[in-house]
Length: 182
Image (tube, rainbow, N blue to C red):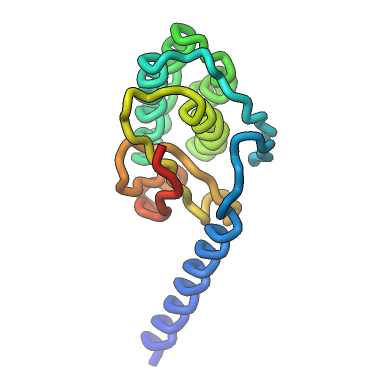
């Protein structure tokens, strides 16, 4: 009887989370992210376009960003710091100054929770960069987890369609959905 009660409770919680995710998806339908101001957990980010990055530069920036994302997916804060430090050099070489603050914050943070907060900011900035610059035909996926940051939700970019969540890592590796193909 106890197992049946636990199973019912688990089913109810799962349905609630699924419904909440669908509601957030509906709330974001038709939403124009190109000019919005987003309040993140600690920072307000202006989504201004960086129109002076070449297609090759955009690809290099994405490669560095994906390395940080992959380290956070694996919940490896030391690796995320190292990758963020390397990414700062790529930023300097490609005149992408608006990405410095969040990248340096990831590099200096030793706590993966703080790195993930800053990664949310970096993801918003990278999204605008990709939307406003060429990527040499490579598909980039904007993915969204409705449960990130106490159900506020957050997105990230990925080169693969499969969901690998950088905000939860192995706790909820595949939580999320593809919102957009860029």
